Length: 318
Length: 205
Image (cartoon, rainbow over all chains, first blue to last red):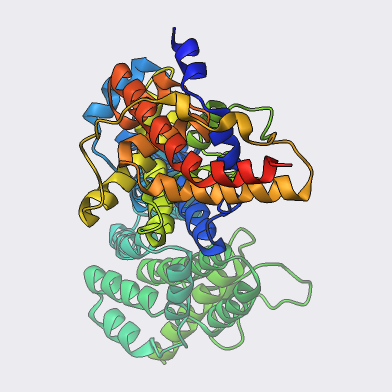
């Protein structure tokens, strides 16, 4: 019916006349064409849903973009989200996600026991020389302990000296031990006067006290100081712990020599000790007149301190 | 490509983000739509033709989502609907629209079509005749009410069916038929009054 009406109501002559009308080939101006096409491109690009919009952030997904999805299962999400179509929101969402990821990575940094173990290892390396030093001191203290049976005052002095050095030895690291070494091997000071006073009083306690003083100002004898000085020079090239240990050992040896000499003087045994015996060695010391005896088991520093104390005693008597 | 894809396919591609599809649509409907707008507005409002034409396309771009929602919607029908309503608004504002159809006598016996030359004639005199006929037809169209003019143009120039015309001008099917019939009667009378004497004179040996 419709098609028949179309044919009946269509006049071919009028239609032909219409085709020959002068305005049949008219077209809009080029400006209108550019405006229309430009507008279409602009709107199309502005509302074009980006395929990377999902990757940027779930919050950057606009409700309009969701509504354009062909999958009807996501239509409900379009109603929940705000109509965000500004790309800056997508950027802010990306920054938020990146910040969250950074925080999560921060939580996975190396755990505490790892760096704590390395720290323990480092401390152990630093404290190893101190332990060796303590052990050495314990050995050194063992020797005066044997003497203590004969002369308690001298042994007490040596122990007091060891106790006085204990905090410094245990509390100081390698560098502090090095710094303490010059103090221990200070230039020799005259010890004759205190020694004279001590021997003049003939008091065991005073002798022990002076012994301690001598030990803290280690100038018991010149050879001892020379040995200490040479040890100091060597210590600069050696390891700090070794140098400090040697310095302490030298000072202890000199103190032991002084203490042993004082003990002999107190016992009335006046003698000069030598480390090795030579054929031309006199049996009697030329300066003091004391008899010369062989003592090969003593350290050179201890031997020198012992002889110097004897000679000092001789001078006080003559 | 423009011949392969239908208008609806190109419009879907444009809605999917392909700007080139819109260019093809525009090129396909540029001249027919502009011609329809210009003839519907008439010689008195011809200067408004470009504005109406431009507004029609921009409105189409803005309302592409609403076109998607309509199933089985003809792009051409939708395009001409937008242009028709925009042009009618212009005519209403100018006061030139004739809203009431005149009671026109349907007298097809007086049509002089039998004496007119064939439209495909190649003789210069015959081509000149048709050019004058076309010009006269435009003059006759100016005398028609807007809705009759629209029905005639959509049916004879743009090839829309009566069903499609009902959608464009938003009228009942019978109303469209009567308006088209009135338009034909008026135009035939108008055209015969001018050309029949001349043709009779030309056909006289």
